Image (cartoon, rainbow, N blue to C red; front, side):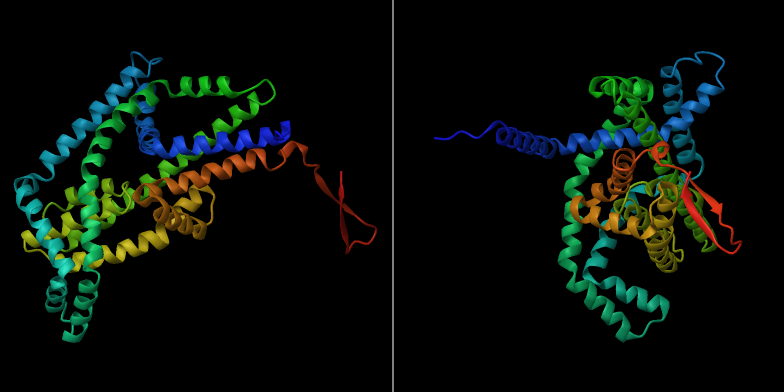
Length: 364
């Protein structure tokens, strides 16, 4: 029996190690996702921590106390908003939560089409078309709701764990990054890895800034729309919509269901609000969000839409959220290692020929 030579054995071993790494990543995918969301949450809170640290009279050189102050400030603001802005909503929270299943049942059964038709003055034929469409997709709607119900406990556990892990990244994130660089770097590539870490840091800051911009736009739009339509607690519901904008798909669905249900219970113009929310969602997903993401991360808006669609098809809600920063990370790595350094590119100067109407480029 002939044994493979050293080169063949090295290739086979590399393939085996790569397959083993992929298997480990697949098995531990939920843990990796939780840590990824913890890093993003830390980037979201980091500006508050830096602000408190910069204006602190004590412990200016320590991040731990200011991380605790940032968490306490967020908790206090949340409690103040819940008590000051939405007191009636808290009283009717039980009614709203109990009415959400009935509303989703109307959507899946197509009964909501009749309500929309009667309130908006649609023709019977148009309302019947919408009702038939919803009835045909009733199984898909019910399956999506069932998947959301099954994923709710895991999502709730992740929501509790993510802020806790983010405390460690906020307190010792810089030290952790330096330790990883020293662990994997050599003398030749140490500077390149530090530069790469700096570029990734800036990229994640820009991604979080884009998410904050999108959340602020949703807050303004929903608040103004509800104020114009006479919704009670419009500001509080708008803040809820802005916060839930950070959660893809499920976030705006929960916000829309809560707003529409609150409008229905308070006899507001919830049909018009539902129509405005649908229009805003289309404008946000295919117009505003790709352009904001593309501007902040320096990628084309069409590529952002393609990335979100592929991420949703591959990884669902998690894929939608992590697809854009993943593509931006790959772009940074490609620019760092695949493209030649800027200082190795010879400058090109324009030298004028004797003919004043012509120019030629030469390497200086």
